[in-house]
Amino acid sequence: MHPALILAGGASKRMGRNKATMIVDGSAMIVSVAHALRDAGCKTILVAARDGFQRREIMGALSHLTDVRCILDNDLQRSAKSGLRSALRECSEMGIERIQLAPCDMPWVRPQVFERLRERGTPVVMPKGEHLQPLLSLVEVEVVLAALDRAEMRASLKNILRSVPCQIIEFSDEAGFRNVNSLNDMGS
Image 1 (cartoon, one colour):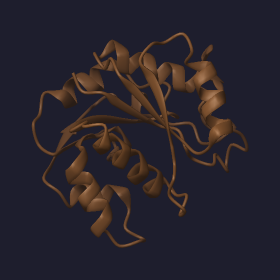
Image 2 (spheres, rainbow, N blue to C red):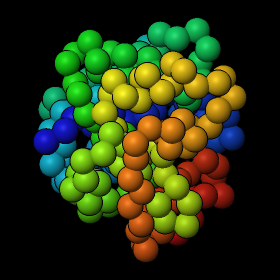
Image 3 (cartoon, rainbow, N blue to C red):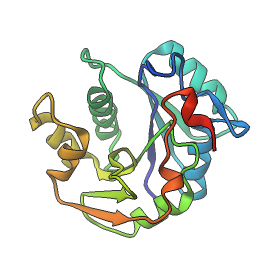
Image 4 (cartoon, rainbow, N blue to C red):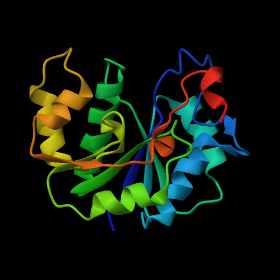
């Protein structure tokens, strides 16, 4: 089974505080995502964090789980793409060839999403409900790193991932893809 990389290094500007550890439906969002990944068979979970303070907060929320490790963003740009690039570089150094991406702010994502993505063998497998979900992709680390390195600065992650051989899997259940960017997004 592939390891997972939870993307939690964002600045949470719209929320005004660290989204990963905010409580939604009784659990920290990152805990809900980690449990969905574990239920889908991901035994190793890596978490991309912005800095040491965020790492401490996240690891406290995930302390009940084993085989969880944080990767700090060491890129000077400090953007979503640079954080992903930084984390994927470390994954490459660890010998990880394929990894399941998951954003920390999708507390309703279901294990079945990850299970369906795992059934395909292209370098990038991206789910689509109403919209593409590039941060929920199952990716080959080296292929995506190369795409990130050659992409223009302003290119969207969706377009970067679509620039490599990819397969888009349609999902009819959009509720699991809902993310939380502000307090208004927390209602059911």
